[in-house]
Figure 1 (tube, rainbow over the protein chains, first blue to last red):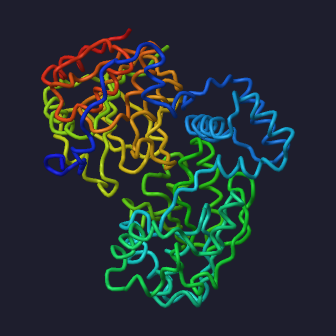
Figure 2 (cartoon, helix red, strand yellow):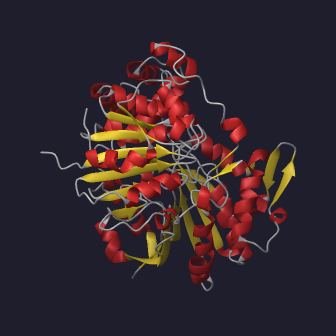
Figure 3 (cartoon, one colour):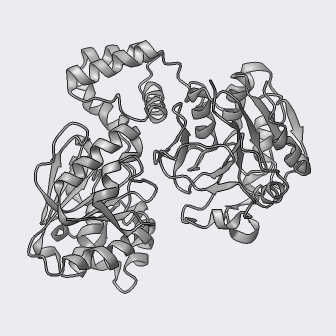
Amino acid sequence: MFVCPEDVCGFQVDSQRALPSPPLRTHKGSSSIAYLYPLMLEEILPDIAESDLETFFQITHTLYGYDFRDYARASVLRRLGTILKKYGLPDMKALNQRLLRQKEFFETFLSEFTIGTTELFRDPSAWIALRKQALPLFMATSQIRIWHAGASTGEEVLSLAILLTEMGLYPRAQIFATDIDQKALQTAPRARYPLRYKRAYQENFQQVLPDVPFSRYAREEGTELVFDPQLLSHVTFLRHNLTSDEPFARFEMILCRNVLIYFTPELQDRVIQKFIRALVPGGILMIGTKESLFWCKEAEKILAPVNNLERIYRRQG
Amino acid sequence: MNARPYLWLIGGSAGSFTPLRQALLQLPYDPDLTLVLCLHRLRQARFQITDAFPRLKHWLLSEPDDKTPIQGGAIYIAPADYHLLIEKEGYFSLSVEEPVHFSRPSIDVTMLSLIQAGWPRAGGILLSGANKDGALGLFKMYQAGYFTAVQDPADAEVPHMPNAALALFIPHRRFLISDLPILLAQKPTS
């Protein structure tokens, strides 16, 4: 086993697996790539003409009501490349044709296009900060309305519900969990996940709640990890498009983590302004730990950090 | 009209960290130079890696947030558990989409984004490492006309990553890690 010295990058590799090295240039020309990368040939640099991309934006906007023009371009191109490959489509024109002709394909497409990566208590230190510094602010609040925007498959909804339960706040809480992806919204209310996630989820859980047994909230059932249905008793799942739909209420807290990263600075600005308007005075906003309010001028005046490192803010006045 | 600094995109994993740190110590400050380091790391390793690099005089050392503008005179280190993408507008984007070669950040992903962003002056470097992440990305950089360099596998603590690149193409330069500071200071365009 090789472990990176200083253990700073923490990189570990099983040297038995890493070696021996592949033969050097045993094949010539493009065949050598096929040899080494059987699955990567059509990978990831799709040659997408600007005009085809514009057609794509028009189709998704006018036919389906989703405007992706202000999504960060590098990621859009990667997603489109992945989708072309997965559905065996030769180029962007073919995808556009399919989106035009096969309306039922759009939900599948949208689910692929949207990145739903999440886990229970992803970034434990952020959840520790939420628990210790933000949630105690609501101890005397009679009604805690929470908007979880971009809830994906629901793991962070459960994380939040667990913290609220542990702090005795859950009976007063009402969580609206929204997402753009209908498929994720079908998964989330089940609160069941593949058992292979258990180890990572439990590790995160114990970091955030070291004195609480994981079994209080989750149990194994066959090939699944099943969470206590009580955790979702105050949760409403709704479809909502952050970029076009208005907030549907005012909230004591808004969580939106690792959604803004897919937007351009201009769209980030608009969405954060939307959050500010939807927060009651004193309300809490939590974004992803590598996201920032940098591009939103209004935020500087209205949102004060509760924990700057963990990106938790509070609306002033 | 071109205010974009020269950008070295450096990928590595096992065995690259310590020599890279030593090389950076010898690198003179250059306001027209940006280093982007894409190193495989444990996903829990937050907020430590910038501390682990030596405090270099004048250089801005940063683990960029999403949409951080890319500046000259800066060394950026890809944050753990995110892909680091370069946008043509001149800032970074982060993504949590699936790992590539079991890696997030993935060197391939960052290199391909640089090509698609059309960054005007850049070079790609691949160091010691334990898997083939970065090999395809560097090859594509080569094909797109960027300067490319690969650490000599015999000189690498873990030669798998350089070997994977050399199996695909012949880069402009094969170098010993001791020559890295000179290479970085040259800013070649090809």
